[in-house]
Length: 219
Ligand SMILES: NC(=O)c1ccc[n+]([C@@H]2O[C@H](COP(=O)([O-])OP(=O)(O)OC[C@H]3O[C@@H](n4cnc5c(N)ncnc54)[C@H](OP(=O)(O)O)[C@@H]3O)[C@@H](O)[C@H]2O)c1
Image 1: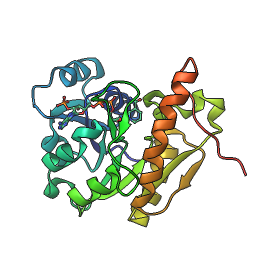
Image 2 (image 1 turned 90 degrees about the vertical axis):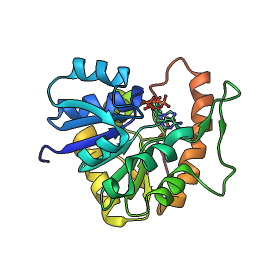
Image 3 (image 1 turned 30 degrees about the horizontal axis):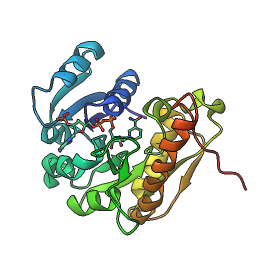
């Protein structure tokens, strides 16, 4: 796949891990934050080199031919709204966020009770973006290197309302991150399931000595 301009909304471990992987693949990545002078983003740019840059959510969305949303669940709708309807129109927006509420400490609770999801809220906030939910069910390091768990023999999920966008994201998961097994959960209401799973993921993490694990669906 040709080198592209990618916008990554989010300066946490997910945004910087995905951003670094994309730069290593030859893409031109702008990390977005609430402030154009975000310190974490500036450090990441210093460490990552000339194909890395940073700016506001708005600037990163304008920069990207494809955009990743890697912001905290409680701020994700605000982040994509700040990114701007005009900057995301017609673009694939890969949403990896989870609706986790840490306000009462660990373990977190979900922001939803089964009749809505962050994926749906984000799609409603930027209706002309082609939102595809994926990668939210694994740790940041596994997102970009699935082969480090069971040789890559495990599953990741996609859902979203636009079939062409989902097909493209499946190609991206394979070509950029080396995912071998992708299960399509259907339209964006599938996010209700894969986001709810993350509460179980947190319990599995607590029950093991590593966050570098995943599930394999067997029939
Ligand atoms: N950590 C993982 O391995 C993992 C795995 C799967 C999914 N996820 C999901 O991926 C997302 C990113 O996780 P993370 O651990 O990298 O980072 P995080 O700490 O959850 O989120 C950091 C980003 O959220 C933005 N943010 C926070 N509050 C905001 C608000 N009120 N309005 C707008 N933006 C706000 C921050 O903006 P500033 O830069 O301006 O501070 C920052 O860019 C989360 O939704 C998480 O649940 C994480």
